[in-house]
Image (tube, rainbow, N blue to C red; front, side):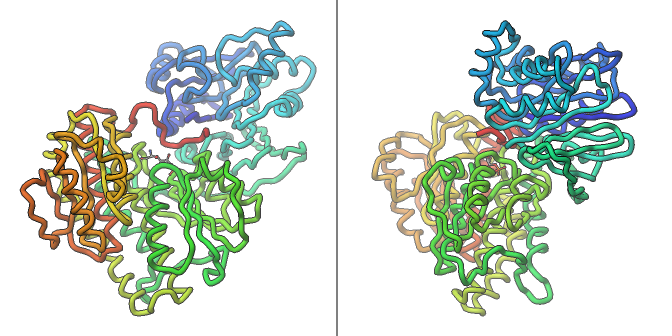
Length: 605
Ligand code: M6R
């Protein structure tokens, strides 16, 4: 998704803009650009493709200037090419934009009627044209406020003006925007991560806010144009480094980090001395909760689904899991005694944020499970439960999924204990079992070589299926999502018991079918479903526990995972699925960390 940078300084800014744009690459993009001002001129450079290409252009023809804006674009209006790339500049003003201007067609038609012309197919260019007109009569801040009044939709903007070489204006409605502070230099950025290499002092714009950044000062205004003060946050330092190390990709590094990330997370939440789970500041007394509603997108939604099984199993609560993009538009009945839990790695996902916003407007009690603690979702929920996984760079979510499940499991257990839904002895036993997770994950990772051979066997297939029952059903969904997003191989995740109601028709000779069958209460039934698949020619990969002792010569591949407490199954059975999707994608020579068409942080709906 698009990302914005702005820097105003007492020295040349283009190199730092490029470096910050590289930090925004994780969001996914298809073109890049920058504009600086020097000698009373706007210097605009942009290109389709990667930031490296833009860097080469700058190397050949440097852009001078102590103030500038930069952008990585993820195409929404108009194909990814040089003209549609941001910034969009006129003779006197240059604009970068993240978000969507919903009334851009209407505005464009009106402007065209009055003789204005457009170079690009983007929605953003209307902002440039409107500002250019208004600047004929108004000073920049007033021109920005008047322009914002005509815009519908969501945006984060960075704007520079040819006549004013000493300030940048930023504005936020919907899309996130942060300001960073340093000596004789201030910054604008789509997220704090992009600014982290330059500063750890950050403020966040709220909806409707506008800011004016000069090198020694930042002024903030709210939507009523009143001057306001902003809190300055000091960012935490990342313990894990954002480099691939000796690994071939971030994704495989992140898969192998999971014994450590889960260990860190457990340390954060379990009091070693008292053997107790610590959760402070839950916005509602667990004894008074009526219903828990879990909301997320993609992989985060799958962790919500797993948590639904856990909460139902461990507590007497009603539980719902919902996809954010559906939740936000349904006629949901809110209840002040419900707890709404928002799950998001990035904490910036537009649909999840909009669902949270809806809950806030209804005065509902909210809680977020995020990896990025400085994110919009974290800052706007009543209580934040970080997953402590460290930066996740690969677009395919892996260690964040395990982190989300871990925090949701800890929360389920704690709620169950507070409500007296679980016996104290059992509660303590489960805490003891939880502490084994990092070691069990490390053991499961040892299956990699075997999984690589399986990947070699199936990577040329046209499709695949993933089956499971109970909490293994969302794991099947996650396995299928991972395989399709990384290797572009069609994959369907299904509850094993649903096969006979339609999907069984898809089974043909040699179709790879992954059957997730831990030794739980569904075990026998899942194996019967597996036999139905085998009978129709399906090539089965069975994932089960070491003690299951399944012997069937018709099972093509079998991975035995360590025996463990049954509630831990989702953690262990996810590992081979992550490795399978990684190795299939490797055989297919796919871009592991940046799968086609996808973005790490989905900030448009
Ligand atoms: O940052 P979030 O967790 O809110 O992102 C949600 C989804 O976009 C994300 O999980 C997506 O499905 C992943 N690419 C899956 O690997």
